[in-house]
Image (cartoon, rainbow, N blue to C red; front, side, top):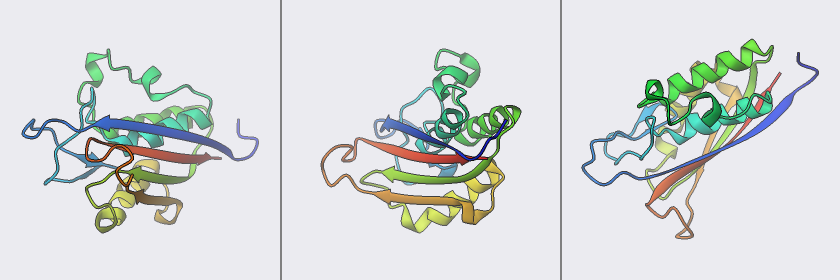
Length: 160
């Protein structure tokens, strides 16, 4: 099916859960134990969701909401890495495969840099890519939004 590289853009954002809600925060599959989690039908991992959306878009297969709707009880609480692995299977069934991924997290906290390599490693495993094909960066919104209220993620995926 591939006639050269294909590029897709994904975006996901979730509001923080109230303190003490018991929800875990996972970013790219990595647990940030000292942080409140995010509200979502799934585990609320915006990194995995944005990467999955970027891949599905690149393959012209729709989006995460179409394949994993929040009205489906089977996907309630689904782990981001599981959702991402399922999206990879859909892409591969269409005759394509991930070639590289670039992720930018937008959040005031937690600090991403100390855990960046863990996130990259989890994504690389889920995508079946070498580590040097997975990039993770972060920026703070500097009080212009999402200032402690949530976490957003942009992702670009290249498929071949």
